[in-house]
Image 1 (spheres, each protein chain N blue to C red):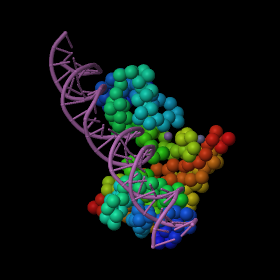
Image 2 (cartoon, chains in turn brown, purple, green, red; image 1 turned 180 degrees about the vertical axis):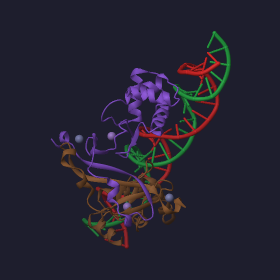
Image 3 (cartoon, rainbow over the protein chains, first blue to last red; image 1 turned 45 degrees about the vertical axis):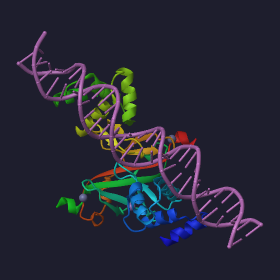
Image 4 (cartoon, chains in turn green, purple, yellow, blue; image 1 turned 90 degrees about the vertical axis):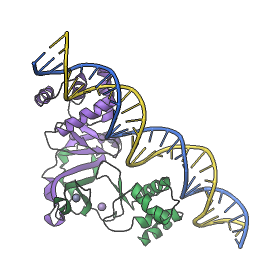
Length: 137
Length: 137
DNA sequence: ACTTGACTTAGACAAAGTCCATCGTAGGAT
DNA sequence: ATCCTACGATGGACTTTGTCTAAGTCAAGT
Ligand SMILES: [Mn+2]
Ligand SMILES: [Mn+2]
Ligand SMILES: [Zn+2]
Ligand SMILES: [Zn+2]
């Protein structure tokens, strides 16, 4: 994700300690943190960072297409740095664990023209729900 | 939806003016109202109905399987009386209009065993997004 | 009609997120 | 190296959506 910082600088981003820390917190695989979780982790490295700045920075990363917003539960949105490989989510209904999954085929193709009602359909969001091995015992 | 009231009575529901009004508001096709929209419409018929009662009644209808909760945007949940015919949703990214759609095939089948990671997958929620004819001009 | 437990109510509370006035600083200009 | 200033950060008020509780009300069985 260090190349992310380069890309952002290239887009005219002013590089601040706060933005760097938020980007660092979002580094990794299967990362799906809420804004407040990002804030908590960022605070460990930069104690004075504010909630508003975390929200602002996450919003900018989403606008730039570098981070995805996912709404797997009906609680807080989660922020997903895995934005460059299309994928869906598999969520444990009990403990909330989230896995990236890659279904076969293109889910968009499952919607026939006769069911599009003149819409220009550009995107589909799929969330699978079930019980994870740990919760199944 | 008048048969709904009968079914609920059969399940031991005490029939109150508030519950009747909420059920009436939810009658129809392609109805996807937020709790506060239900409350606003219920208030026209029964001015003293409280927000808490609307939330309670909607929650009960969901528990009974008579109404579905859908989370198409990241704002308020919407309540969908079309609970007996499985379907998905097509949402206009601009104006928020929601249509029921019926994709071909079973979306659950698109997730191969190799992508289930030991989960017992029981459910899938699909939201298609695009631009509706009215917004496309 | 009486009784009673289920139902409703208003308002306090909470979680998630937005907005704003003000302060601070990254990075270009000198 | 220092200065400038527009962009970014901050804390706190505010909004939206939803939950909870204590007290009052009423549907329905007797
Ligand atoms: Mn993901
Ligand atoms: Mn529907
Ligand atoms: Zn689990
Ligand atoms: Zn539209």
